[in-house]
Image: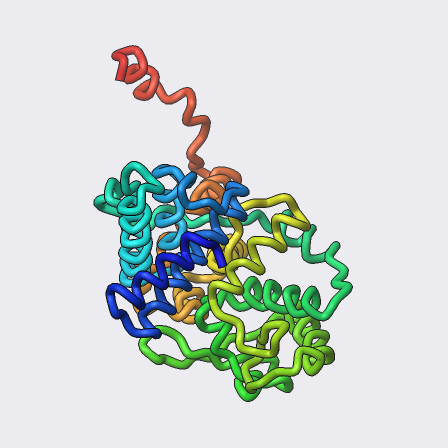
Length: 311
């Protein structure tokens, strides 16, 4: 454990008299920050994290599927940690207090191209138990579009191998059934052949090398590290695969209602964000097929006049 973090946690126990469970929550939140900074910036010393980097971290948390409440909780834990560092003279000021209002409006999702995903997955030859497990995780996330919280909650009994379907528990404890594509199904079967080598201590489908259920933060790190290692693509997280699933489905002709059901969205307005990502392709198809097509928009005289007016 990092020395500064260990000192902070001891302070919370001995001085602030916080419960062990509360302190453990602080530890997880701050260690997750350390892992992120090490992966993205090759830096693990919190005294060297910049405000820009920290702001990017909070934005990425929300962008990659963490709820408003989770982001604010992590923000509170990290702000308190930096207050401790400031009191002890390790930092001059608290960089988190300057991040006053984290913008929680969702930006357009990060999406990987079909070509990049297919190239990586088809060329991936797992050579260890953990590698086989990791491939099954990534194939399943991309094949089904499920949330990482849903993935880590899947038990062995939730998988219907005969029908190639998985029952997942989504937000609001709502169950839904998702189909599993052939590549993901084969990767899952390969994982199940070696799963016992991890000495699983529960019936949860995906377990760590110590046999315990994976957490969402563990899966986040797994996905990030796999793409960085195999494709030199940085910043890929489980929700990137969920976004890619929905966008590629829409590009391939699936209707919004179907995608809404597969993703487990309460409202179709949430699903409509993917239209913005596929709009260029839709306009291209329109331009190629409609008798009164859009035409060359660059020659629009109105646009030219606006440019002449300096707008």
